[in-house]
Image 1 (spheres, rainbow, N blue to C red):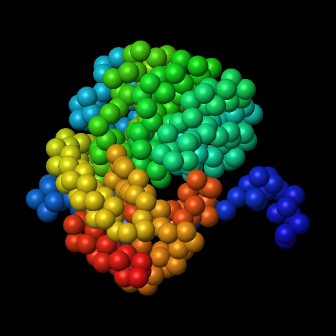
Image 2 (image 1 turned 135 degrees about the vertical axis):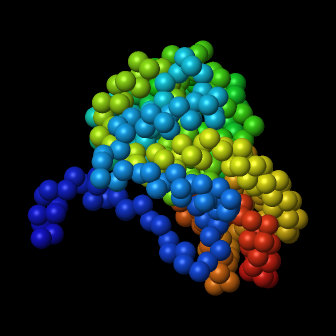
Length: 358
Ligand SMILES: Cc1ncc(COP(=O)(O)O)c(C=O)c1O
């Protein structure tokens, strides 16, 4: 059996580990950048009524037309741009890589969202790193431009703000990269609900720019809906790779329903932003921690040297699940990342952290 597996499965796949999601039953879950607020009760009744009309015996509407109309309105997507839907933005990253692969290079800063590297490997492409400065995770632009020239990447992913560091790259640096890149540059705006800037309004200025977003951080992670915005000429090509009916009927109805009431989710994001500021201050006041400013719904912090694993474990013992990043990228040595939860969850996290720090 093992011999057959070795013969059949590509070595780069055998070398990978499956994306690991830790069990969270009964824990305060602050590890995955979810919105902690459920859909308000008053909306929930209307949402369930909308779902009653779902024709589950039929295939879904193939292009998610209603969702795209609702997205255009809710997100003020310019009429000059097209929209492609994915089963989460993960699927869109995969579609992009499949469209330009096999062979060739995908680049992204590191540390950043792990799926860029993983999907490059899955699709037979090479991944190359854009360097970040260790003190504030800003882009090392001269070195980044040199590497772009050397590798001539087909795709560059820039998470804006970045996960797991929480910072925005400087706009001027991104513009230089857009001008220098020989291929496509995808601005991954997964954390747009919590950020102050976007490249949506810049799409008309650059032929090689695409903006990718998701409803996951907006408050609808369970739906799995990502969207890519860009010129129709590009998106028509990617649409050929999208598997038929990739957005199921329940997701289409629910997403269109929620987007028509987007101000409810914007209000939740506003609360999360305010609570982020309070959580930042509380962490910053804890002796021994280095806390990094965040434009997203999570905060990265560095524990005293060699303590990250023990602190992470002690939090877990007290029922709080956050993300341990120490042991991944060298720039994340001693680092942990906490998602901004409800005020009560944040308080319980801080209490547990104070206990764990001793
Ligand atoms: C930068 C970034 N992009 C994309 C995603 C994935 O989004 P989705 O849930 O739409 O697949 C994440 C998830 O954490 C992320 O951090």
